[in-house]
Structure formats: C-alpha cells, structure tokens
Length: 65
Image 1 (cartoon, rainbow, N blue to C red):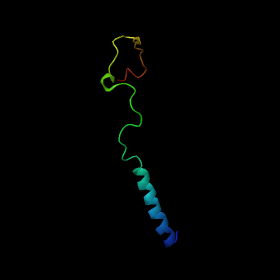
Image 2: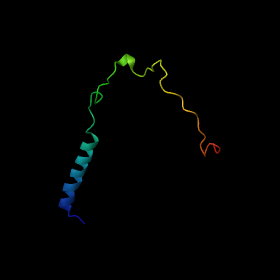
Image 3: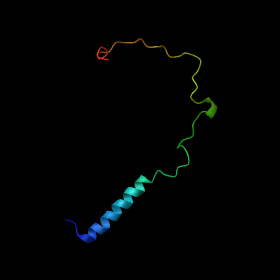
Image 4: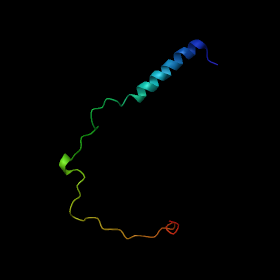
C-alpha cells in the first residue's frame, strides 16, 4: 500500500495529466489543413463517367438476408 504522502502526490499528478491530455485539442480554430479546392467546388461530381460499374457478384450470405 502506498504511503499517504506518496498518494497525495500521485493522485493530483494523475488528475492533472488526464485533464491536460483531454483538453489538449480544445481551442483549435479550424481544420488542421485547409482544403485544396474552393468551397464552391467541394462535393461536386464530375459529369464524365470514368469509373465503370462493376457487375454484381452473389455473396454466400445473400440468401440469408
């Protein structure tokens, strides 16, 4: 069992470390990296259909669903 003096040192130190780790990410103003595309062009799909549709293959558990 720890002595009372050692416990009085370790418990506040542990609480301080836990709180500092929990709050270490607070206060960030924005994203870490700015987006590479303008805001108006984000999440817009291109009109060209470059990717071919893959044929649907049966899965062994499909019969259960």
